[in-house]
Image (cartoon, rainbow over all chains, first blue to last red; front, side):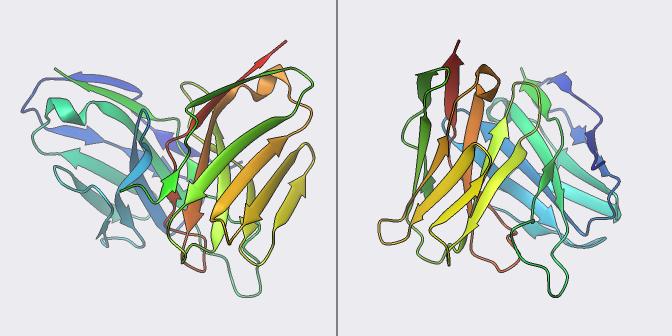
Length: 119
Length: 113
């Protein structure tokens, strides 16, 4: 069964602290993502990675960085946490379809989410 | 500016009736659309998708309709069950792999017994 694991489910951090959110997937997927979910705004893409040591900015990368040293692990880093980064963070992984495969089965698999409160 | 919008933040229906969740988009380059369902304290899970070459896709109680000219899609759940109560996210993609999703703000569906 597909598994995306976010090790920290609930965190409370102080303004200015450095925060690490870890995500591990066991499906050998190439692509991994970090989203944040806020009421009324849905899921917004922060960063994504399509290979080890590769990263691309999403829609809202400011205040965040990422690290992908191994294929199965994608970390989100808040260098100096601020109160406007209080949110639910969702990690996801995805494998592009192979040749001859249709799009109908494509799915992105999400972790259970990490609730971060910055005080 | 949100490219994918779900204008109804919440919807309440009676068990056994139809639930209709709506989604509008502005980017005409979107060619693949998905619906995700999310329970509290869990990550979203894939529900159903549709490619822009189709106008309807059905999977059991769930049907997604796509109206490209109106840039509108909807999810129908028939019959609705209390276990369907969740937040539903509409998502759209422009790339061929169905990657790089843009999500709507979500609609909270409550199905009353």
